[in-house]
Amino acid sequence: MKAHKIPSNSLDIYSELIKDYQDENKGLISSTTSFPKMDSLANLSAVKSKEFTDTNRKKLIKAFKEQYDNIKISKNVEKNLNLLSKNNSVTITTGHQLSLMTGPLYFIYKIVSVIKLSIIMNKKKTGYNYIPVFWMASEDHDFEEISSFYFKGRKIIWKQSMGGPVGEISLDKLDFLSLFIENELGTSESSLFIKSIIKENYLTTKTLSEATFGLVNRLFCDYGLLILDPNSRKLKEIMIPFFKNELFNHNCKKQVDNQIEILKNDYNKNYKPQVNPREINLFYITKGERKRIIKTENGFELSDSNKKFTKPLIEKELIEFPERFSPNVLLRPLYQEVILPNIAYVGGGGEISYWLQLKAFFENQNITLPILVIRDSALLVPSKTLKSIEKLNVSYSDLLNGKDHLIKNKIKELSSISLDLQFLKNKLDSQFSYLEKIVSKTDSSFKGAVKAQKAKQYKGIDNLEKRLLRAQKRKLNDQVKKLEVIYNSLFPNNKLQERTENFFDYYLYFEHNFIPDLIDNFNPLNKNFIVFESK
Image (cartoon, rainbow, N blue to C red; front, top):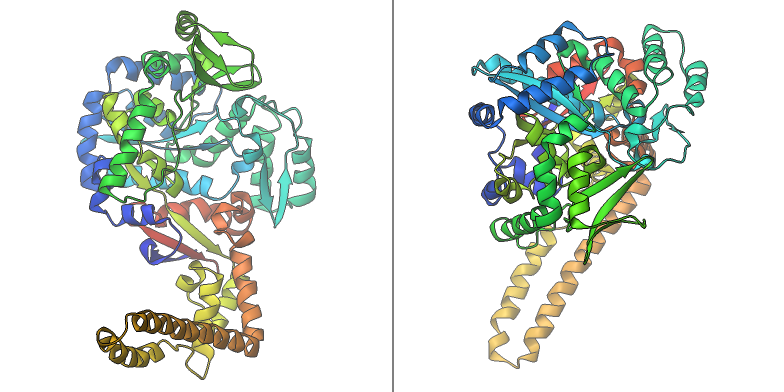
């Protein structure tokens, strides 16, 4: 694949907050440990390796080895498991829900970004070992979000009623994947690989956690990626004091609210949080259910349930059954950072946005916030679409800035007349400057009349410009339709391709070099959007 790298800050694909984070806005310094750079990552390695206790490292290694007990381990996975036991080893982590067949493409991009950042840091030879980790969000309970994937433009849905943590979902009702193998996949080498992935991981395992663990391991074991399922009694035992603090002191809400105010004061007074904290940011897990814990006058109760706890009883429950307590989206980062010697979290714009709310909470808990790194993003252009792009001389920047932007710019380029009427405002300026000078010499009502007329004239010019563009669109209708075909093929449902399309669809097309090409070209520290062409 041929790669084109476009600076992300030149594209309209991120929120203002994330653009400002990429630009290292000074107002965000108080919400970060450091902006992502190799030197800052190296410096944090020394801090984190000292902060992470030998006791927790031993418990982590034991949990990893138990989870890999029935998994075929590659040499690089075995190497990283052994390295992780050393005090100079740190992790770089990303996480995601257990999406069926990996779900949207960015599932893969997150993992590749973590692997590439680990490779970059290991080459720097800082004296520390950098180990990529994938955190399986197995305790989430939004089954609808993870129960489908797209293949060749068609949405394939896993229809099953299910409550509780998605990782515990039984795979008994996955017969439709057998039909998928028979009806949708051919006999090419890449098709046979996908068939083996499905058979080994979805048709022979018991739960979605097992299937996802096996699938991700099969795709990335050669790169030494370690996979962790946090829904573990041994790991949650480490969290008992933190969960107890959350139940009785509610520090997450207090400190996140505090950080939100810091963001408003230091960064933007109109800042709106990505996630609002609850009084208690914990769930309680029972078979087939994950219920929110709510504080009451007499103790605690579970949402949509009759189950209640007194304060002594819930503390006893936590000590005896820590595995029944599950952190929500704002408490989960703390869980991750307590049990891993982690220096960086790699995520999408939405994830980084809520991590920026956590600095005060982490300081309150005496845990170092990791450096937040925005994952790589990419657009994959098949050869057929590439030919159309080259024929119409379409710019990737125009494509990535939206359909309206693409068509408007191309119509301006193709038109024999200028579609920019803004110069007329400059001519009006001199006329209204004269009128504004004589305002003070006449009745005050004249000032309002001049202001209103100026606004009316300016609006009229804007409207005429829009009508002129619409007229040219009608005149150049054939070109507009071709542009729409190109755009719609690369941005399904008017969204970034990576948010809809599935990895295996493109694996069929780009074949076994797909992941190696991604790793060669990704670098989350470079802040580029990458367009891959297939010829």
